[in-house]
Amino acid sequence: MIIEALLAFTLASSMLVFGVPDRYAGKLATGLSAVPLLGSLWMWSEFSSDGNALLADDTVAFGNTVDWFRFTFDTYEWTLQWNVGVDGVSLPLLVLATVLTTLALVSSWTPIDGRQSQFYGLMLLMETALIGVFTTLDFLLWFVFWEAVLIPMYFLIAIWGGPRRKYAAIKFLLYTNLASLVMFVGMFALIFGLGDAISTLGFAEIAQALRGGELSGFAGMEPDTLRLFAFVLLFLGFAVKVPVVPFHTWLPDAHVQAPTPVSVMLAGVLLKMGTYALLRFNFTMLPDVARANAELIAAIGVFSVIYGALLALAQRDLKRIVAYSSISSMGYVILGLVAFSPHGMGGATFQMVSHGLISGLMFMAVGVIYNATHTRMVGDMSGLADRMPYAVGILLVGAFGYMGLPLMSGFAAEVLIFIGAFESTVIGGAPLFTAAAMFGIVIVAGYLLWAMQRTLFGEFAVETDYEIGRAPLHDIAPMFVLIALIIALGVQPDIIYETIQNAVNPLNDPLALVVDLGGELR
Image (cartoon, rainbow, N blue to C red; front, side, top):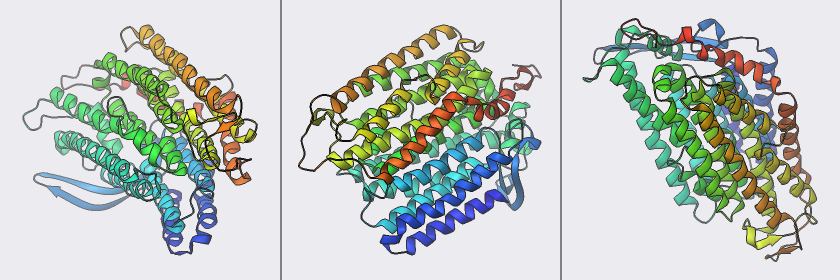
């Protein structure tokens, strides 16, 4: 019942914070957020399950399943369930969500000075939905949490964002809502195609039925056509959330207009919802389709790496630079997933956690600099290292983490992905795809070093009337926590990597591949 307790407590905390005076909201919300953080860390300390929750029921940890009600549609009937649990894929992301929420709340104390009870209440409401996304194992229940994340994020951008906040919030909502509709259609096409082969909408039952060749035709489509149709719709729906080029245009606008703590959550956790869903649905439930189109998917991933890095190279706003860096980093995740190799899939999942920490660190550092200078434009400031040594040093650490400096988590994640992609037997021409993706690191180093040199070093000059000095301790402390985590995972990846590999290895087992209707292994 630990998952239910986390959901109930976080939801109740958000309601409580909504009702308190503004002057108490920030500290109260931060203190309350420590409870789900400690709860997720306790779950990590007690976690001992091996395997993937979608492929074997006995691999679900902290699980609980309760029949809810019978749902009938036309000739179809299913039992809807309260079905929650975690495995080695979802638990690291759950911990990431709770860690970043608490740190983002601390980083909010300086920039958020109006309607604070509403801001902090929405942040905790978003954390509730995120916990649900990473712990739910029933499709309809999961979809409710998936959509619920959008509501607080929309208001957080639209109310506390920059001058074009309403445009950015509406664009974010339209893109992600339309994507959810596309994904929903694709998933229910599969569910209808399975017919009587499933009695619930549990992830495990759907995945095992699909991999066992139980899919029949639907709406005039043969099973193979239906698989491809559903795969494309699911991929498109999740690609917007990741985001994958060319569905990325909402992200820079959302980041630039969002306040710093919201950017931390958007880049650190919300983008991982897309890659997590791709792994759960496209690459676990429909692996045969993914393998058959591996080269195309790998090309999409590599193109996102290169194009995202080139876009970042052309930016002058520090927030836009970090935002486009996220697009590039998520391209590596796509490449690792489609490799269908132990280090490919394991490295991709490790990269989700690593990028969440590094991007959170970068946005916090940029936010601290903006709080002092009231500008993010590279050409408007220089020589900040002498005036803000801690913030500048932290920003450099984050930049080197993005560039893959050894002994940092970014290096471990990228090396694992490159090894996994290079050794892939699924991607034709895997070494060429890997080499192209590795070139992205050169571009990343180029634009980050250029931006750091222009803004942090040289003669001090800032086009602002504000006095610039050292950032307050409560702005710096969360970033030191992130640095410690980034270095810890870089020095000892097995803190989480062994657990991740135990969950993704069954996806690479040739004997676990889908069986088609003729009984022939794909």
